[in-house]
Amino acid sequence: MIEAKLFLNIPKEVKEALSIDNYKEKDFLFEVNDEIHIKTKNIGSLKATLDDFFRCLDVALKTYQLIIKIRKVKPEDLETFLELYYKAYRGFDKYYYKKKRWAKWYFKWLMKRDEDGFLVLEYCNKPIGFIGVDCNWVSNIEKREVAEIHEIFVDPDYRGRGFGKLLINKAIEYAKKRGRDFIELWVGVENKEGQKFYERLGFKKDVIIKDWLRMYKVIE
Image 1: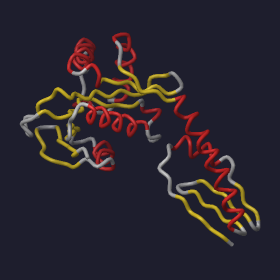
Image 2 (image 1 turned 90 degrees about the vertical axis):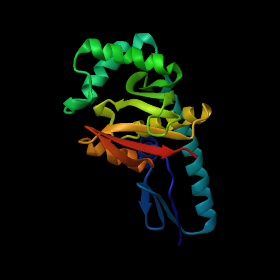
Image 3 (image 1 turned 180 degrees about the vertical axis):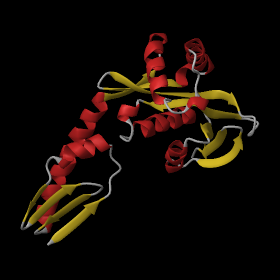
Image 4 (image 1 turned 90 degrees about the horizontal axis):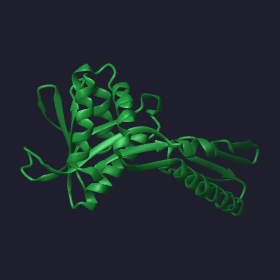
């Protein structure tokens, strides 16, 4: 028997779509879980299976890209921003503007700080997450211009599916385009899940000031 295991960094939705074709019999196995596992009788059969798999993967990725879009925020996104902002921060009373007039001011402030870095992620044409990265920011700690993530949140109904990671990666991509080699953010000290999320993406913990923990990453 010939056996192959592939470890591919592909979105969860794509992996789930491919797993529909999982198949197992005496002399053949094809499974997509945390890894792609193929077992077959000979090298020719393995090559044919891999060729078919990568064709399917290419189609799945192209479909995935069609249903996910990250674009610049527009003024008319205000009400959607407010709806998701309050939904995402539920349970974290210390860390958001509770009065609507201040939340509206915050939205406008994010647009004014760096209009090109204020982004919304749409899934199947529905806004589900926002990020505000500011490449005009001068860090009080670094004493120079950095990429500062002022805001990021994803609709709780869509968490755990890689959308937050997509937003962070897009922010880093934008920061590189603007010539920044350092990105930082402040996360609530009680937001342990948020801290773990940023650590998984390569951010390091730094100082705590009042209710906020600074985290940063060197952009390579």
